[in-house]
Length: 218
Image (tube, rainbow, N blue to C red):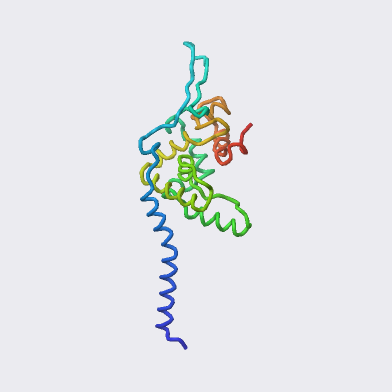
């Protein structure tokens, strides 16, 4: 029989090899993140182009000016949004938003397991930070593109607070054709500011970014 000491050494070598196999991509991703520059929009605090409303002296809207890209867009602070819409968005898109570092390993394992079981993509694993990264820097939906997106998400998380990330996301994401940000989306769909949305209305808006043309409330 094989001596117990020899079996223990082989088991230890296998464990070390497995650990190295698991840690190598993690360390490589961290190195990529460290070498990834922060997008100028975030590094310089540059807000996206926004529109404006022209009103008469009685407050009646005379004309709406759109952003440079033709979208309806108006920046709003996270405090002005209220708490219902951010909570609904996190519940729908990224339940561990406040605990992960930009990439959610549990979501990746879950999505991979579902894909293997169903032999098709059932759910995604992108965090809100990854979606913000995708919005700022367009990349192909390839393995290399997802890798770069994850690295940028880690870089964003290292540079911004969770509140800042959430505010950037809420103001930059698309909520339908020609609608950018929660302020214009809330007024377009429900004719009220985000703070006044009911829980059902907040839930309806929270589902739109996943597929703006598919989940249009209209």
